Length: 372
Image 1 (cartoon, rainbow, N blue to C red):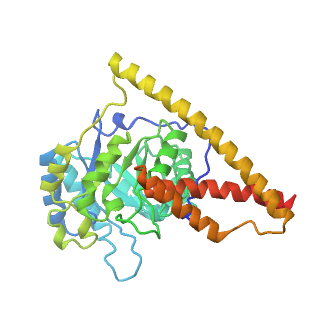
Image 2 (cartoon, one colour):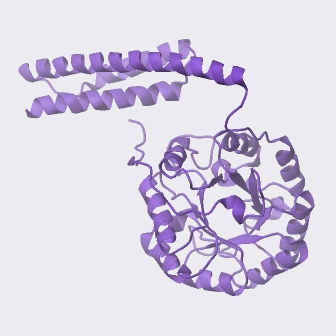
Image 3 (cartoon, rainbow, N blue to C red):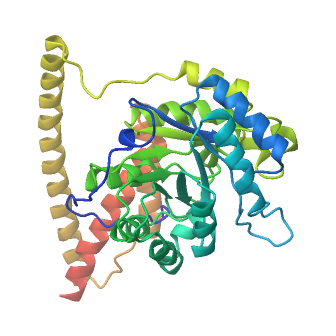
């Protein structure tokens, strides 16, 4: 079966959010946040910052000061000392500065050192206790907070973290899509799983969202593809790790660009408009969408018919005392439908997901019949 994704849909919810363009210092897409995964020493931080500022001084400079690591005795960041280096970045380049916080003490130290923007990491988002601790310290403070999605694909945890920070009185909030851990084979370090990011945008239309291609990809080769995909999905910006000498970085060297690579990437990104005012475009799009509507009606009618047949099969199985799940039949059917779909030019994973959903619904219907 396909890996289960935890999504609970909801109606659009209002959040009192201040536009990211009102406080980021940039009045148009994309917002760019860049800097090393970890602040390692003062010279590394300042050299990277100046190189990035030479590309565009409106870029927000990021660096990890405290690094949550899976195993002890790994490099866990330089701690409070690094906040002083970030202050120097701000003084020497004029760039806004941001770092990750995971507890109340981190927040307090960042506020003392004039950090402009905070972000809550994926490992912290999974803990309502930790997020609430951060929220409690932020009451009465006016500072932007960015919130990464949790490690696992749980939309409600992400929403809960956003709501806790908003209820503390923070109105400058940004969601960061950094991908999700998966046990499935994937070219990515973290599965982008755009479905969850899209669902969050649909639920909270006013909430800005940026993408972290570095953590999704885990390698620099894939970053341009994900960065462009994020902009094509109408996300507001990108957080991209950049290191003056990534080959000697103390954490995540494979996913950090050099400043020159960052400059090349930014020069090649295409920023698209949400809509065209061309009458020809609007008329053509309207016609194509009308065709989509007709096809969707046909799909829904066929699904209804298919489920009616599944219901009859369920009755027949009950009458003849036969189990609901027929594993051999299901495997044969799935293999056949994937093969047919590929011959029609359809993506294998897409066909597989569609048929898993159809099969789950058929099983649900037949289970109800068995229990009636």
